[in-house]
Each structure stands twice: as C-alpha cells, then as structure tokens.
Amino acid sequence: MQISEKQLSQVDHQVKRLIAADNFYGKRLKEAGVDSVATVEDFLNLPFSEKQDLREAYPLGLMTCSEDEVVRIHSSSGTTGMPVIIPYTAKDVDDWGEMFKRCYEYAGITSRDRIQITPGYGLWTAGIGFQNGCEKLGAMAIPMGPGNTDKQLQMMMDLKSTVICATSSYALLLAEEIEKRGIRNKIHLKKGVIGSERWGEKMRKRISSELGIELYDIYGLTEIYGPGIGINCKYDTGMHYWDDYLYLEIIDPATGKNVPDGEWGEIVITTLVKEGAPLIRFRTHDLSRIIPGECPCGSHHPRIDVISGRSDDMMKIKGVNVFPKQIEEILGTFPELSSEYQIRISHLDGKDTMRIYVEASGVNDFKSLQQRVAAAVKSRIGFTPIVYVVELGFLPRSEKKSKRVIDERFQ
Image 1 (cartoon, one colour):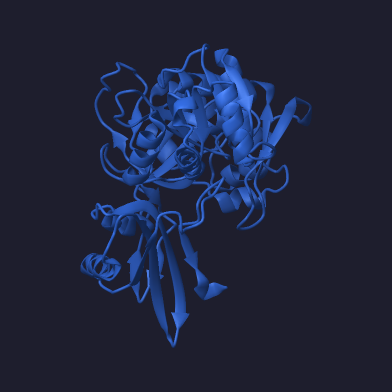
Image 2 (tube, rainbow, N blue to C red):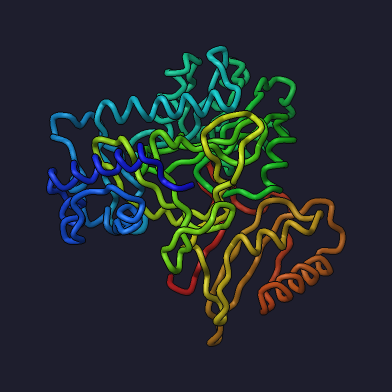
C-alpha cells in the first residue's frame, strides 16, 4: 500500500505543524533536517518514532496544539516505565468516535443493539472509546467497566445485552461463568467485540461456541487514538483499517525497510489528521501483514491480518529465540488441550528452564500427553521444556489481559 498524493499532503501538513509547535517531535524533525514532505522518498526518509521517545516527552511534550484546545488526556499504563500522555482536541475525540462507530457498523451492530462495555475507564483509552462509538451509533451503552462478574451477568440478563465488548481473557471468564451457572438460556448476546490482546484460534472457538456469538477483532493502541482504528467485517478476511485517518506501513523489524503487501512484519502508523499529538511513523511492534486485493464486503478500506504477536515479545532461552506464538501454535495441534496456557521461565542450577502449564479436560493419561507436548516443542524449538498438563480452570482468569509469559529470571 504505497502512500497516496492526498496522504502525502496530509503528512506534510502534520510535519509543518509539529515543526511550528517546536515540541518534542518538532525538534526531532528539525534535527533530522526535515522541513516538508513532497514525495514517497521524502516520507520514507522521515525518522521512526518509538514508545520510549514518547515517554521522554512526558508530561505534555507531545502537544502540538495550544493548551486551550486540549479537552482530554489519555495515558498508557506505564507499567514498564514512564507513562505516555496523549492530549486530545475536541476534533480528535470526535474523529475517534466516528472511527469507532464505523467499527460497530462493520460488525453489523446497529442502534437497536444494547452494548455491554467491560473494559476499564479512566486514563486508559478502552472503556470510554467503546462508549463514545456506541453513543455515536445511537445504541444503548451499558458502561459496566471491568470486574464484579456477578453484577455483569445480572445486568446482561436483565437488560438483555446483545453485544459484549471485552478483552478475550474476560470474555472467556464470562463464558465459563455462564456455563457453570447454567444461565445460557437467559443470555441474549449475539456479538462480541474483542480487543487489547492477541488471542489464538482455540480461545476464539471456545468463546464463540460457549457464548453462541459472532466475534470481531478490534484494533487500536493508546498512542494512536485507542481501540477503534480497525476491525474485521462479517467475511472475517482480516481487519479493515481507516486509511482516511491513518497511514499504515509494514516494515521488516530488523532493517526498518517496507516489505511487500502480503508479507509479515511490524505495523508502523502515521496519523493523518490528529491535532493534539500527531505521530509520524510510529513503530507499534505489533506483527501483521497487509492483505492484498479486495474484501468480499466491497469496502475500499484496506485490510491487515489479525495481530500475530509483537516484535519485542521474544524470549531468549538457552541461546534460542522463542516467541509465545510458536508455543501457542504447537499447543494448538493437540485437540485434547484447551486454549489456556502459561509459560514460566526460570534460572535453576546454572541453566535456563522453561515450564509450560496448559489446561485440558477429559484426559486420562496426563503423563503421556505431557511427554508428547514436550517432544513437539523440542522438535520445533530445539530444547525440551517441562510440561504440566492441568485441569480446566487451574490457571488464573483475568478481567483484563492474561499474563501468558512470566520470566522469573529477573525477579
């Protein structure tokens, strides 16, 4: 997907605004000798930006408009360092709402739906983003926020919620509780809009079958508005993203060079019309690919594949580079195993050890299954992990994101 003339013009406008604001980013562009963007080559020569750059601009060093125009701020969690503060103008909030409304529409959700919103509110972009789009659509918002599963299920039954918005981890928790309590016939859900974390095919099938709903992957990140910048349609051939608001590149994470459409790499996003804190060539570290061709739905908005992982979630164990997705794919080849797993890495007696805990139901010979899983991991990755097959429900469930990898070597 090569950048269009219109998009180039929009990027040029953003670059000039950043330089005029003389903010953190504007200074960076000046240092790189950038003053305008007129060609594809100019665009490809623009420096990348990273989350660490945004942290260094704390608290309001990313602001490109006047402070009078800022109506809201949002922030990343800051769990791994200084938080990132993103200022929004009224137009930014409105644009985000329009994008989110479009997401609901692509999922076949209408003003007649009742949308139960379980992601968190506050500085995080999730809950308020889902609500803003819901209100733009004219649907009924049920702004529950996370937790209090008893009340979630009570409201779901009493208000006859038709759409659930959640992380995949919390959607699974709710599905298991509904099954456990025998209240499936009192639930009116038809669709689920799921975001915030990568999830595998096994988990997707479990949630869909246990709740009896269609599932839609929603994409977004705090630095780029929040959730709502892309979603799959009913044909489920990838996530459409809104190229009238954003320009997406897929790069080779090692070289920084663009890869051809259809090849996997890291998503890089440039905001085309954002006022409060425009971002130029922001490296998301999310791994995907641009899907060539047209979607059967007829939409002109391009598509990316579902997020397969992150370029920075690699684990180095016994000198071998391992990605969580590799382990998930191996576990997925065993029909006896469930979707829930956890990887723990520790350093014992002078060597690294990987332990894999994975849930299963209806298994008689746990020992044999553990040995077969360990052998499959060794044949793919090159070393033998310790595998524990555990009963369904043994691993912790989360109302937010599940922690799949726990590296105890640095604790």
